Each structure stands twice: as structure tokens, then as C-alpha cells.
Amino acid sequence: MEIKIYKKHWELEDVFTASYGEIKGGANIYIQLIDDDGFCGWGEAAPLPTEKKGTGVLYSNSFERVLSDLMYLADKQLSSKDISFETLKIFHKEFGHLSPEAVCAMDLAICDLLSRRKKIPVIELFENKNKNIDSTFSFSIGSTDSVTIRQQTEKAVEWGIIKYKISNNINLIPWDLLSGKTLIFDFDGVYNDFNKFKKEIIESIPNISHRQIILEEPFHFTDDNKELAKLFDFMEDKNNVSIIFDDSVDTIEDVLKINSVFPKAGFNIKLQKMGGLYPSVEIIKNLRESNVLMFGSLYETSLSISAAAQLKYILSTSIDDLDADIYTGIDEKSPTITPEGRFVKSQTGIGYEPNISNLEEIKKHESR
Image (cartoon, rainbow, N blue to C red; front, side):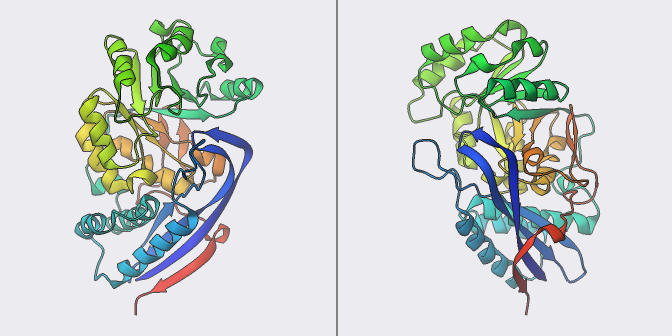
């Protein structure tokens, strides 16, 4: 067994404003597992050491912490006798307490390697692919400039769902371009009062009863959810409006806790926060019958996006909120972009092979 760890640099053309602050560029970590038969598997960690607005708390673990955890996992993996689906389960039980980005990278690499050995898509390690899927692509617009928002909307109207990361500034939306479009509004949890939210948002959306609307993280889930409960009660008979959580979800336990309080809540599932494919599939199995599920991304490249794009095949309906690599950089091997979602070009493994010449090798581990 041989394990290599790389750094992948990326930079955005324009600053992107998100719930975790303004992003211009960064670096991700790739890991490559190569077994004794020459099969390899790739994984990605996407740390975002950016402060949550006004909190002094990092949105995710630092690059240094994730890299340290991943090197530790690499040493542990080299000491194991084999890689199998059973060892994947043991891996998560034993190391799930480490940074989820590092766990995700190793999870993806193991899953990629196992599925390449079998010559199957990575999702078929878990279940047979559902051939009758109803999925949609969601493209995020994170500018706070009205002219830029309009220009990006004009380009995105053919891509399925448009997601506006606008916090409470809904007046920037170019409504004249959006007839018949399903829309997501990502509020980053800026509200904590139902009446204020109702007045500033719900009553400000033109023809809201004739639109399909998804409200993402309008309120954070906390120990006191009285105002959030008012919103769910108000939306009880409005079948065209869904409420989903994102920033309130950092672990599998968060998903299950929110679901126990608000059974109709939807979720934006992100591999980097959940720790990879294995735990994400476990969540989906618990929620897929009755909840709106989106598959989202942090600032990942096409490697991690390719893995997340395959989650749709174990659902009947889902949303591919997988646009990070449109910003971090798309290449000829990236999943195709369609109104129906992202689709990998290779049907073996994760479906993406990085260009090693674009990577900076950090560490090489070999079994003795």
C-alpha cells in the first residue's frame, strides 16, 4: 500500500459572500491510496478556516488541523491488513471523532478504491442505482451587488433552480427574470423573530403562492425554537414552500435531532461536514421517504463534487446544490452541468481523476 497527500490550490475570479464570510481563494487536500495491485482511490478534504460572521469561531477546521488528522489516518491505514467495506464501517466508528474534512477525504479514497476494484460507480457500494430519479441542479449566486446578481441570474436561468445567498436583502432579486422558476433563498440564519421574517421576506416575495420556494436556514436551530416553530406552523398548509437546514447541521446527530423536532424539515447534506459518503448514505436512508434533501458543497473541487453527485441515485427526488467547482475551477473531467443535476463522465469509482501535475505533493507514505 502506498499513500500520497497533495495540496490543491484554488482562487476565485470574484469574491464570493457566504454564511462563513467572504471567500477569495484557498487550498484543499487530496489523498491518493494505491494498493499492491495498482488500483487507486482519491479523496478530498476542503477546510475553510474562515470565521463565522461576528462569532470569532472558525466555520471549519484549519488546514493544519485537517492535514495533521489526515496524516494520522494515513499512518493508521497503512498498518491495516486490507481495505474492504467492513473496514470502512470500522474506520468511521474508530476515527469519526477527528475533523470531518479529514475523515471525508479518507472515506472518499477508500470508497473510490473499492469501487474501482469492482469496476462499478461508487454509489453501488451502498445500493443499486435508482434509474428513475428526479433531480435538479441548483446554482448559488453570492454577490451583494444588484448588477452582478442580475448578470448571473441571466446566465443561470437555464440551469434549473437558482439559489440566492442574500441574507435579508431580498430587494436585490431580479423578479422579472424568474417567472416559473423554483427558487432557494439562503438566509444564513440571520432571523430570530417570526413576525419580522414574515413581514420582510414572506410578504416581499411576489406571487409567492404561485412559486416553488425553498427557505434555507431562515433561523438557526437552537435550544429555544419557539420562533422557528411559528414559521413551521405558518407554512403547514403551504405545499409550495419548504424549509431546510444547512448551517445548523454539523454532524449526523444534528440532523437526527432537528428531524425529531421538525419532521417536515429538509436538509442540505454536505460530505465535508458529515465525514464522507458512508455517513451521508446512512442519513439519507433515514430521511429519504419524507424530507427534502439537497446535496451541497463547501469550496470543494470536482473530485468531491463527483462523489456527492452520485448520492442522487439512492433517492427518487433531490437537488444537486453542487456548484463549488464552477468557482474553484472546472476541467474536462468535471461532472457535466445540466438542469437535472451534475453527472459524472466515468462510471467507475467516484468518476474523477485529478491531474497530478496541478498538485503539490506534501507527503508520501509507504507500507514497510
